[in-house]
Length: 461
Image (tube, rainbow, N blue to C red; front, side, top):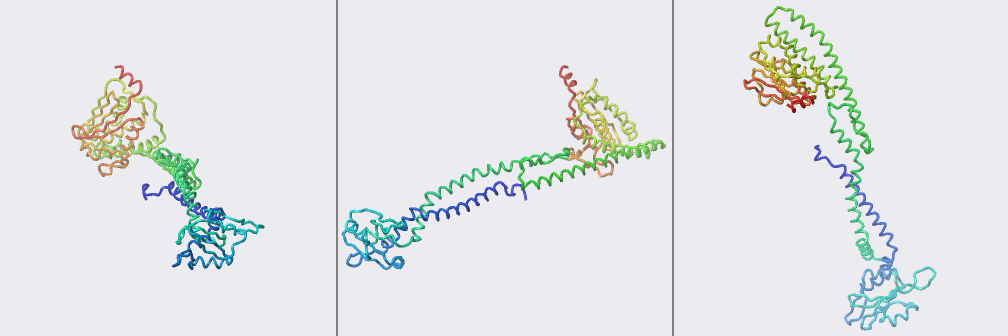
């Protein structure tokens, strides 16, 4: 699964929080409805329930008189309230009566035309005065006035409209407000809660083979993610130990090989001159170079940026003196040119000698055993080594610096020399490039920054 298709932990938490709050709000709605059941809004609906049943059942007969139709609600009301009473009067003064009107409300029956709406009686314990309601309503028989008691029950229709009104006026806006606040605030809260995880991810992105001992920070990491961070840190610790064992093995092996290689070189040098002796010397030289490369890799791994001052011209001259016999024996001529005066760079002399040795050794191995190997050192800090061999294919000019990469699979060399040279040059803040010379051979060019006093003298001149 790619990072783009992986679900976002932040938005998963937000969605789940919104869903949870929605469920909780629904429960709150239920609780509010139950609580509101006893409030004045639903009390009013309860008090008006008998009046509403009468209104819905009221019609006119063929003589235009008020009558009650036999509706289901009316039958249920008569069963639940056997003492049902009411007076229904239209605008023409015709009325419809049933039951015994309580004596306390008899006066209202005579003057009810002059009353718009009123609630009568007390619905409290210890007061023997039944509740009643007087109200003008619109019915199928026209606008009428009804005086009746508050018997009956609250209908589902009343409950529905009461809940709908409460939801529309209170709960609906509250839900919208909570949803908006959740969508705005929750991502901020989650982002702050996961800030420690972001710092750990940033640190993980900086881990490199050249930076051992680095661990992911645990400060601010959520407890649920902490086991993963600890597991990664434990894995990094195991990798560091394995890398250290590997480095110690290479260093020990290189040191152990140096003595037998030196003895082998001495014995080969005592052999009579001839092609076989030349090839054996070259092979022994490659072994010595490979051993030195292993040691150099270990030194580079532990070395910081060098600060000593090195004369490139003098360094190149020493390396050429050491390798000239090998080059002459292989059939080459050496052409060395350096600008006048010291050419100073800030660096490590041993590492730079190893880099130049590898480049000249590479020219001897791949120059076709013919022509001239040219070494140039100029005042800008540039060293150029060119041969007259087959050159480097255009597609390989960058890949030849990769470790274990070889142009020819002829079994000569391990493919580490040019990679080591590049690492040494990088350590010195320089750059190396490969190209083909004017005569078709390979040219490798090193550019190193001049030492501070060398650069100042160049500017003054």
